Amino acid sequence: MRGSGGNTLCPRELLRSAGYYARGLLIPTFLYRFTKQRGIMAQLNEIRGRLALITGASGGIGAACARQLAERGVHLALTYSSNVIAITALVEELKSKYAGLRFSVHQVDVASAEQIQAMFEQIDREHGQRPDILVSNAGHGKRIPQVWDIPLEEFDYTINVNLRASFILVKGVVEHMKAQRWGRIVFMSSIAGYGGGINGCHYAASKGGMTGMMKNLSTRLAEHNISVNDVAPAMIGDTGMIPNAQAIPEVAAGIPLGRLGVPEEVANVVTMLVTTGYMTGQSLLLAGGLK
Image (cartoon, rainbow, N blue to C red; front, side):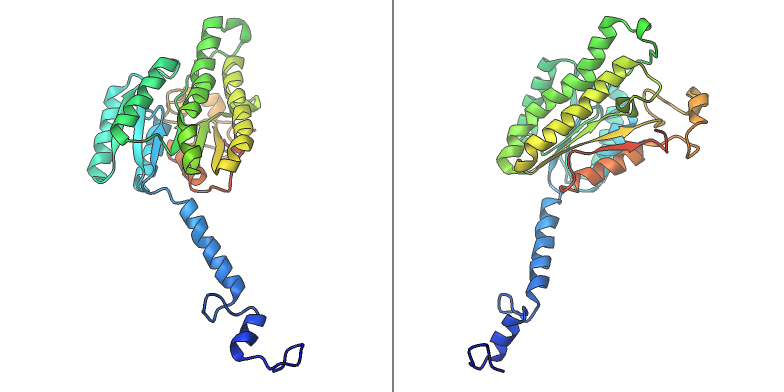
């Protein structure tokens, strides 16, 4: 076959001109590029061997996140506030299943910046690095529906635990994430951040502020390949706020799906977020159809 200049094309040139030659292989170049890109994406979304910090890991949602990430080969730094029995049982369970992983436990009141800083120093010593993945899950939510019943001290403490702590935690991990050009940050928000839920304005303000901070951070940190998202659950059973449907029968009856969520379903979303680097700046409502 002759080219446009009248010269005869050899078979290799003919294949190349048709887009069928890449790195000495007789494969379509578009397929080669697609396969190469898929390999890169798989590496970017691989979390095996990473270190995750999960706050509030003694509770139902935090423990479920720990189990799912450990199953995927992630080393864990886990915090708790007071329930030493629950966190000890969780770590013993995980160690028995995943002998090759590192686990560290840190008692922290996340309302205290000093305790958070001390926790990071412990993580540095025990893991030799800062976390690659942050799941800011520890929260406080005393149910006081009416504004006239909410003490100022309760408002301040709720903001400190739910919003200020997440800011401090991000500051503690972001330089490490920037340096390696990889990071995953997930906040645990709430349907309250959208104005719904069964709690008062103090809780709504803390969670709404968290979602606003998440959206701002996602735009600032995207260039460093750091994704920032939040999960906004509602009516999740086996948690400190809602032990079971009997605790809130009137609300549970109004859930379109007809049941409470379970912590494992929240952990499913968290796991999806930390393994999907292309998703950032999103608040995912997990509420059984509630608005």
